[in-house]
Image 1 (cartoon, rainbow, N blue to C red):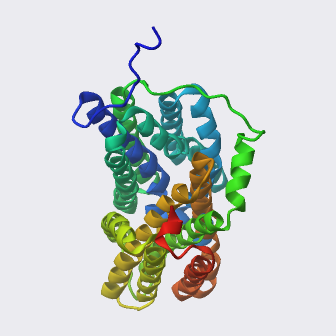
Image 2 (cartoon, one colour):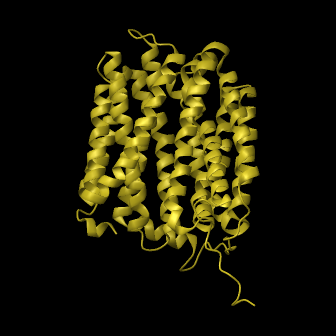
Length: 407
C-alpha cells in the first residue's frame, strides 16, 4: 500500500489551496509586523507621555525585535516537532492577545517587558512561514508564494505605523496601538480560518547535539567567514535602518520643522521604495553578481542618509526614499545569499541571519539614541554612517568576488 500512495507535491498555482495559503500568509504577515512596528510611529508621543527620552522610548521597539530574534530558533524547533501551522497559530494568537494588553501597562518598564514577550511570540511567524510554504506549495511556484508573504510583512510594517501615528496624535498612543492590535487580531482570524491543513509536513526529532544536531549546524555556519560577514551585514544595516525611523520623528518634530506626528507618519510610505528596490536588486544580482549589488546598495543607503542631514524638508524626504530603497536592496541580496553559501544546515544558516538582523534592530536601534540625545540628528547620522561604512568594509574584505563562488 505504501508504494501506491501518492506523494504530496504541493498545491499548484490557481488551485483553491494555493489561493488560501497566499491570502492566509499575507494576513499572517500583516498581523505580525503591524504589531511589531506600530510603536515606532508613536515614539515621540509615548516619550512625552511617559516622561522618558528618545533613546529610552526606542526600547519599546528594541525589546520587541530582540524578543523576536531570541524566539526564532526555538520556534523553528517547535515547528519541527509539532507542525508548522500549529506553531504559527499559537504564535499569532499569543502575540495578538499581548498586543491588546500593551495600552494597559501601568509603567514604561512593564510596557518594555511586555513588548519583549510579545516579540518572542511574534517570532513564530517569520521562523516558520517559509518552511510551511516549501512543504505545502508546489516548488514551481514557491518563489511567487514567498513573495506574497514578504509583501504582507512589508505592508504590515507600513500599516502599523501609518495607522497608529495619526490616531496617537489626536487620541493618545494607547488608542493608536490598540486599534492596530485589534486590526491585527482580525487579520489573525482570517489567517487561522483560511490556512489549509498540513499535508507535506513530517515530524522531525529535535537533536541539539551530534553531527546533525542544531549546535553542530550553528557552529558550522558561524565558522564560515563569508556567512558571518552576511550576518553582520544584516546586523549593521538593519540597526542603522531602524535607528533612522526611530528618531526621524523626533528630529522633524523639533525646530525648525515642527511637523506633527500625524504628518510624519506619511514618511513611512517611503517603505514602498523598498518594495520596488528589493525586487530590482534580485534581477541586478543575477546580471552583475551579488557582491557589487550589495556594495552598491549600501552606498545608495549612505547617500540617502547624508541627504537627511540637510536642514530642508524636501531634501530630507528625498533622502529617506533613497536610504530606504538602498536598505531593502541590500537586505534582499544578503538574505538570499545566505542559503546559497551554506553547505549544511541551511535552515539554521537562515535563522542566524534573522537572529542577527533583528538583534541589530534591537541593540543599534536603541544605541544610536545616545548620540542623538547628546548631539541631535547630525550625531545620529554620523553614527549610522559609521555602521554602513563598517558593513561595506567587511563586504569588500570577506565576500567572494566571482559570481560562481556565490553558489
